[in-house]
Image 1 (tube, rainbow, N blue to C red):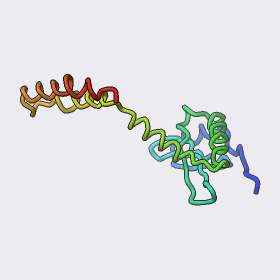
Image 2: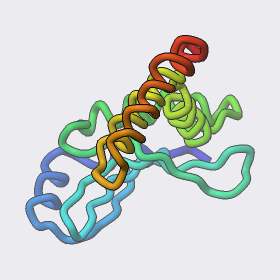
Image 3: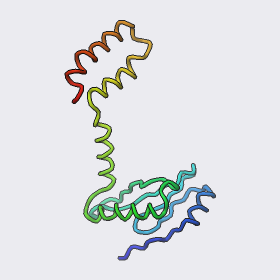
Length: 144
């Protein structure tokens, strides 16, 4: 079955955004323009990997991502899907890796900023915790 494509145009999209009513319109080949009642316009790619459950991935927001750019990005993601890859899963893994890519030194800095600046801790407690972090833990584990 052939996939229909390029059903939307910029003029239609601008009119829908100006109206502000919630809609979801397909451009074909899984690319969908969605507009929430709050006014957020988004490009979504809907697909199936290996014929299993339908999935979707957000490609970007309109007007930051134009119709032409959304079509190009959707084609690229569609190639991945046709090769058996799951773009949503890949995006999730990448997000988790960036969140987990903290070094001990960054964690220490974040801890000091969030936990050692609050008033409930005694001045001596804050001093000794910072000392432990800076003199013992940081030098030995900081680059991990």
